[in-house]
Image 1: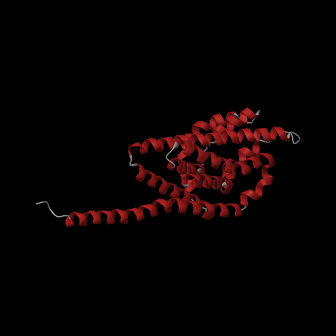
Image 2 (image 1 turned 90 degrees about the vertical axis):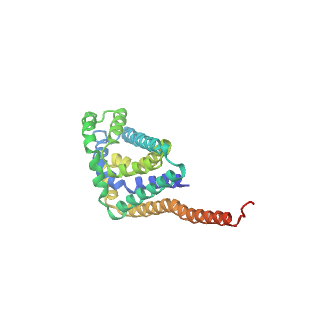
Image 3 (image 1 turned 60 degrees about the horizontal axis):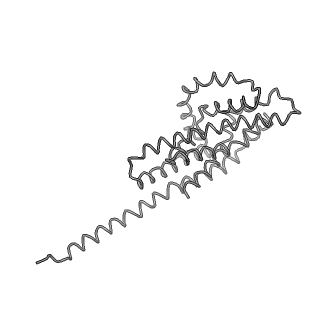
Length: 251
């Protein structure tokens, strides 16, 4: 159940965080339709679809990578304790994202600085693909643009890492990417006419409240299990100690 909740939460993060995505990638998404004649809507759709497929493929690959890394780290850990730690970490990440969506928490911007140095090596390759001349160019550009330093993506990646599994990590980032599709595709098709999405806070508040609920539930479940398990173990130990005292010694 926790894995399913995390997938739904990732989808909500993508949907509700689209204002952040438009600020980071909206310029490039809007420029994809530039130069394509207004009567060639099919070409616009293919370009938008190609760019977003490439971008989401990068997210999915990153999710698989971080999930695999954490799975390798957890090989030497006790299974029950490691699983509980990962769920608590997932809940903490979701609560952090909810803080950004609800209160514009600035921590995401600090996280973005971590990837700036790596992006400088990729940026020249991305610029060579502009202007986009074909849907295949759009796929390649999206695949590179998926590595752009973005606090929201990095935070979603933390949730993917905390899944402790490459398949789950990939699924979480795929759900996140799908959540960003409406705004990013709309930006290519409609350009700056999508401005109301940039400023509207209704989607962010609803999404933030949902992600907060998912985070609290995800974190509370293992914590409650640990709290209920400890008294039981303690009682079990006392029972055995009392039994040992009552058994008469053999003569």
